[in-house]
Length: 166
Image (cartoon, rainbow, N blue to C red; front, top):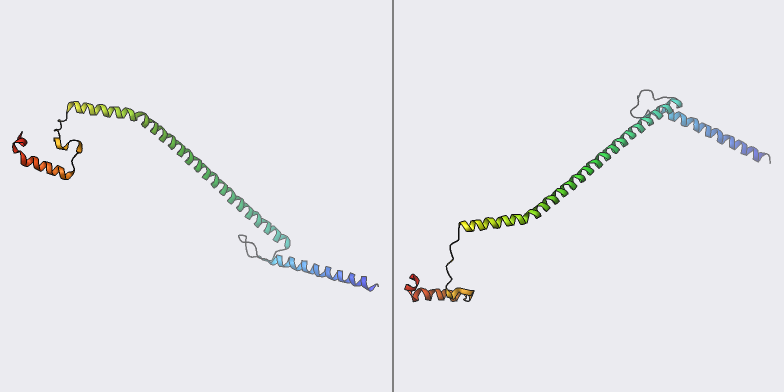
């Protein structure tokens, strides 16, 4: 009976020794790791404390760079938002200006039409148009087809040459 607990105790001690050996080996491997990019190279054998110091310094630099990039992206977003607001304001101003121009055109359209009518009346009073000759009796009211018109014109021309002179 005593051999069972004793064997268990020996097994646990062996496991602890193997675990300790594994932990020591892990620290040795970490000490032999090369330095992170951007840090001075040349001494690859550091103690665990030195490695943690170098690693924390590297991670701090990386965090600062990331924070700087985030700040630049944020500033860029703010700038884009400002440009968008300026563009929207400019579009609103253009729409208001076009609405004012359209309203002014609508207000002045009637005045322009009256002015043009007055100018046409003044031109007509100064330069009266000659009276138009009366239409021949056969062509009034558009009663004849083109073939009958030609026939009527031919009859008028051949029937009475003296009537044409009058």
